[in-house]
Image (cartoon, rainbow, N blue to C red; front, side):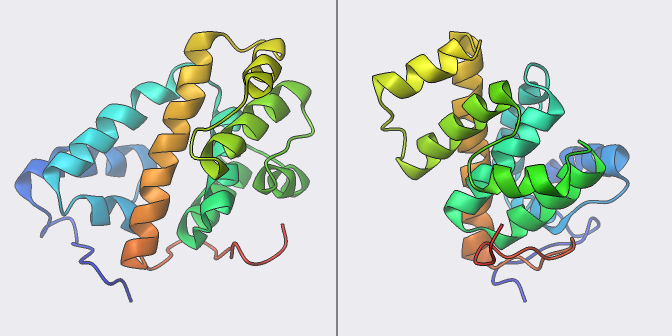
Length: 181
């Protein structure tokens, strides 16, 4: 059971409801994570302000691959479960690729550079080397895209940490970080 309240849509703060309504319209449901964040209208609106624009540049497969790598680094079962489900069903990523993504890798050379870089940013708390930057640039990522990769790491680190603090009930098929990818 979650250690923090996970309000239903009717009980969420009024200022959080527009974001929750948009999520419901987009997904058909409102996962526990978003209901949890909705406890704070400031947090749900800040999250929506960061995550919405980040869907516009990097493709869905790259974004999901990064989410999986970061969730694995941070040991977040909720986010691994959610992004495994989304990776399989939304982004159409194979189970084999998801296993690689959880290890900070990809079978696609360009995606591998992004996922590897994101995993290093997460695991090394931003302290990456000049060689790491050169590698992601050599794969074709411009500075704007590198900034967006870091922004995705930040977005997912927030949700990873919040879910670990709250011990949010997982409302997706469960995947455990401790299990081999």
